[in-house]
Length: 500
Ligand code: AHR
Image (cartoon, rainbow, N blue to C red; front, side, top):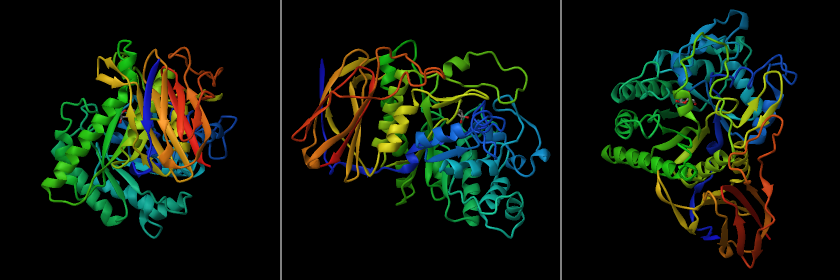
């Protein structure tokens, strides 16, 4: 039996928990929009064509903000196509995903959906095929109250109130050769700076995100961020990070430790941003918008046959997640929370059907994937301040990350409640965790849950939607401020305590 220890102290404050940490992403990709959030013929559809079952699950997930409309899709998108009377909207080819876009669902529908879901919209502008003018037009349409051509058009289209979008991504993954309108760092940095500057002239209160690298394994990683920030430092508030993880060659131990890579990625981008700031003699800090992160079995798609034809809303990227995926995703959430001093916004990519926590059947059921659970629990219970935890833990060797600790954990504390989020990354050994909580005063155990099971590859299906779900862990004991609990191998655990 492995044993680990952690110490918690309210003085170990990292930063506040940012609600935007629990953002997600809706792209016009596969069945995310069509038969995902929007399906007018579905039995649960409301008068706007929004699936109520998906809206309910989105609320249960606790998503706080939603990035839209892409992703790769945005780099060829004309936002105007998705506005105005539906019968006049053009059908277009979507080059990014080799699909046909009917534009039945567009900007005003997305904003209406966000209001119903209770989430903040986060928009991306097209800096692939378009530029400053279309970004300004989109911003005018969204944020100006009335009295100009495009704001009046929005009102005429039925959206009387401005959409008041605060957070804007200046393009998407512009370092990637797959991106429509792919650019060098200098080209992109200049365009992003000028677009952002013009957008701020129209609405000074915006929060702007410059594209960082599409992944830390990109050959231009690091240099890209440095060049882009040299051009945009004064204009933007965030640099983006994107990261997707998968199990390679049955190496579960490395996969479960993916947060090691995310930690390193974040630290590297922060160091790069701060070094640019130092060179520019700026007091400003650039934060990270981790606006795409998830488990994604990307290598399976890379080897797939190229798509033929131009289908409407084909099933694309519909990964079916298992328990180990959920535990890994829990580790990634711990990494994001641990870096709350600089990661102040993040989006799980994506929300429905496309590498998603929520799955739907066209015309049928909606259900929770395994990965739904750690996200929903973190969104619900991470409150107040993030606390760094001091841990001692046994280590094991992994081929990708060398030595890793079995225990990974973070905590949050809001005066009334303290919550510890912990994963046991050992593939085969339970871990007895003791925790010293005395500095938090008199506490009682509120709820302890564990997501685990005998088969790390167990999945949920529409027929067995609760096969993998958090269960009460009755093993925890709290005596005189000292906690003891056993964390099963490959598990995500949430320990909630309240003041006595
Ligand atoms: O989320 C799926 C895709 O991954 C996005 O469209 C793109 O930005 C990234 O490469």
